[in-house]
Image 1 (cartoon, rainbow, N blue to C red):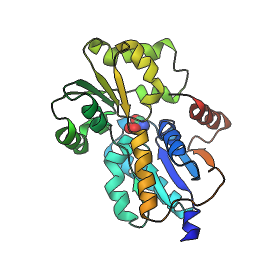
Image 2: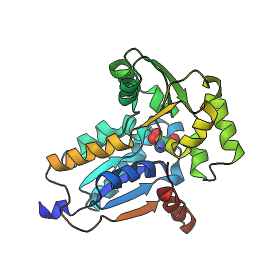
Image 3: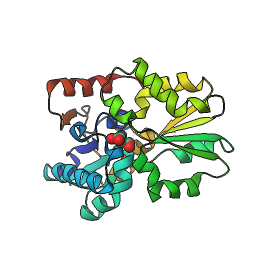
Length: 259
Ligand code: DGL
């Protein structure tokens, strides 16, 4: 078992978005080694068919498992909704932790609030999202806000450019003054949290699934005896299907951004 404990945790997303989750993972589990894979060549997943997202996700997880990953984090709401059950059935011995829109903490914090759930079209279309609203929405008014094009735009960086604010204005501007909370239900969106707040005003509270996912991974590693047992800090490595020095530099830059 000591051998497996020394293994790495594979983390993936359609692109840079999963780096917002990776930051929470490193904060919660500083002694773990993480390998992050961003499938930027195939982003955005949120506008693909479910079959395409399933095939891409299975390919990435197979590579991680073949390389010896001790656990997997699906740092993508879209891929979690589509592929988590299939992946867990295929690799029953590998803890596989997914992410979902943080509606539960949002509804607890704002029990009668008006809450926007910003996410991809695929995430908001699938039954998993509707189950989440039925289970945790309670007395809240939950408003789904699909944001086509936003994740793809975030992939390009330069997040203070006028077209980003213009796009956010189109998606959420009409809610300004009438919203209590925003669930960032796509892992790309924490990187434009400040810009969304500029559109909606200062009193809106934000929720994302990063910290919950990190706690969940810690619990699964502890339960399965796989927590790293070492003094040194863990290593973080980046890889991308857009395998260029510029893309990897972008990943490192997103990892150092505060969001
Ligand atoms: N970051 C992903 C998510 O959490 C998907 C973004 C995309 O590729 O459309 O849903």
